[in-house]
Length: 203
Image (tube, rainbow, N blue to C red):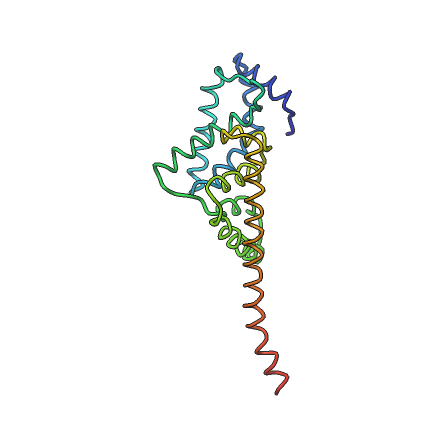
């Protein structure tokens, strides 16, 4: 379901007035994106489910105090989600690997497909470890959850230009790291395949 910002603000106003149906539409619109973000930051799927529910309880509790002030509602909501994750990780000290997120997205994939996906995710996950915490969070909000730069900025409590800068530097670092990994993998593969070919020709 696609809802523009104006429609979201109308639903928020109706939910603030006690309209449960309007809040249900808000939940439906943001639930998947919030869950993807949380699943990218915590280890166990069950924890991601519980935290997602907790976030929407917090949204419901805080909704009467929400004021737009030109700030996207999605950014405000994701700030609640971000704070919930920070509190959880601070007490649990765990972090999700990308495979947790991928298994949810690739539930119907076959064994061969999953092997390829895991190999690619291993490379991406290794590359992500080279980023700063803020860069990783920017990537999670912008690409795992699909937030706009403006919404991500509100969620992180930063200026939009700062978030765009974090995103640019993160992508550049990931690209460099993945290209290095690709070259190393290609060299190892070439080294394994070259020897049998020469032996066959000599024979």
